[in-house]
Image (cartoon, rainbow, N blue to C red):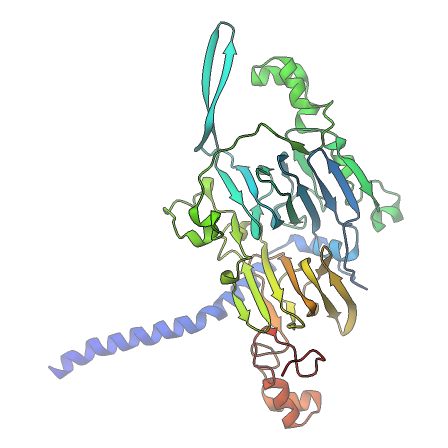
Length: 488
């Protein structure tokens, strides 16, 4: 009897043992899988990275429209060319409609202010929403048409919006306060097979009517070769919407409408720009109760199992709420990350984002990104930031709200918040970006034996012990004992 019981018991123990081993090996397998996927990311090799100095930059060109504006950063700087990215800031006034368009490269948006509605057109998908009825008269007949269309989505402050390339999208501000969005454009992505230049293709409006302000700088390579085709020449691309180039009669036949309607589509005389006022726009969409109360779609917990189908794929995630934090230190701050695990569409875009908050005089551990470039946009406050590459400091300045700092892969960065604190959003060019730390409980220093440290740095064992164990915090540090603001 005893022998008959031993066999099932041994099988159970063996199962539990192998299950524990599998759990322990999971992070390692994920790490090497991410590195292998990054090696397969070919298009980054198109760019050159000869970084002598980084700069905290502000937009250098602004385009004013009827109901908003957009600003563009100088994409011809060395760090932008190295990372293969561009960066844009949009402001949409109340009742403003950002006209339907698509782009040649994937984008990752972050809503710094306001809330609104956006629509994305997925090719071949059904019309699953209705927004009421419309009336039309054809000769002596009158008809009512139910307005069916693809899914509408609401977004709010703190949301990250993932936008694949070549999908038509539009944004509408149905609230009483302006919307501000910042966007990383990953022109170096594999999904962009044109060139390292941000291109927008509008289905409506007249892009060239947007009033341009500010400085335009031609790329250094174009100046050297006398070329007129450098990156960032957006004012030359946007001559009109995509209908403007077609023959009116041919389009009229394709849509089976009169040429007067086609002239409206082509919008050659439209001077409103790409963000227009839409006073009569009425959109109806379901609301989450938690969203009105600040919980958002992420916190509602009410899904029917169909959200991740292609036609209704989830494209947004809120990372502003403190309860969403992945890393938290009550005296240091918090970090929230959205990647392809929390937002699966990012595995296709090969992008991710991280929202950071540092409290007064707190520090973020010196760290580097193993498999991505980083574009950090300051949303509030200020901080002193240093960036080091190959043992040489390439950046050491205070950065303030509204500024952008691009940090190339493997460059080490440290942040120390000012007395007013510091908040930022970082966009990363990998859907599962890996970060390595130099100080703290999870750092490379902590992982090495004391004898290695004593010999490598020619320090005593006591000093090596302090180097390893003095900081017990993981990533976000409270003000240190050497800080003049330290509160013991």
